[in-house]
Structures are given as C-alpha cells and as structure tokens.
Length: 86
Image 1: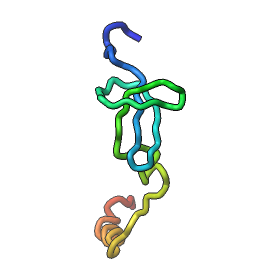
Image 2: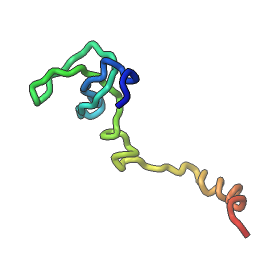
Image 3: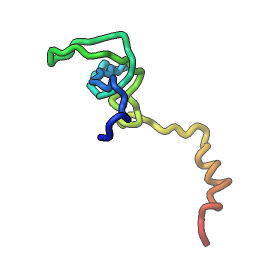
C-alpha cells in the first residue's frame, strides 16, 4: 500500500446487525464510543447497524414481489411494444 494515503485509525471494528443480532468484524475507521468483548477474548469498538446482508430480504431470498391490481400487466400493455424489435 502507498504510504500516507490511508487513515491512521484503521482498525478492526465489530458491526452488529440489530434486526437479527449477527456480529462480524471488519477493518474500519468508523468512530464509536461503544465496545464489545468477542469470543476471541479481544475487546473491539462496536457499531450497531439496522440491517446487513444477513437480514436484508433481497440477500436472504425472503423478498416477495407484489403485483397489486395488475400494475405490471397494465405497464406491459402500455409500454411493452416499445422495447420489441420488428
């Protein structure tokens, strides 16, 4: 790495997903006042986040697409011909 271009406080930080409680350690320079002791016996700065890839419906496969009142069909009926090549 080039010298002098990276922040000085780049260190391991624990990010905790508040929706499911998952914790993971990532190197970051985020400023936080909370700390947490992990299973490895070390104490790390803690950053709490609302949602991560472990709990987001898109990444977990729980996302559902809802077609309310035939909106997709109505859209395709109005604009479906524009994208087709003859």
